[in-house]
Amino acid sequence: MKRPGSFRGEGITLLELLAIVAVLAILSRAALPDFSDVLENSLLAAVANGVVRALALARTEALSRGEVVRLSVLGEGDANPWGTG
Image 1: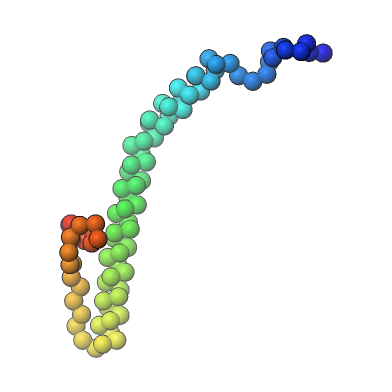
Image 2 (image 1 turned 90 degrees about the vertical axis):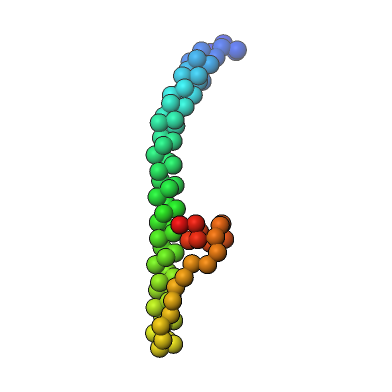
């Protein structure tokens, strides 16, 4: 039977908690470059899909109109990411 106020064997100590936080910090720091690569690849895939969608729309319009349709980049900046190269 336990005595009231006796916490031996329950929970974790401050030292164990600090060790866990240190290990998590090291692991997250090691994973950070990989995460930025994932974000960059995701952005690149999104832009590529946008180009493919624009080309598909231009093709559909050309077929429905029966004439040549041109796809061009207009503007620059955040509103049109194609204009920035």
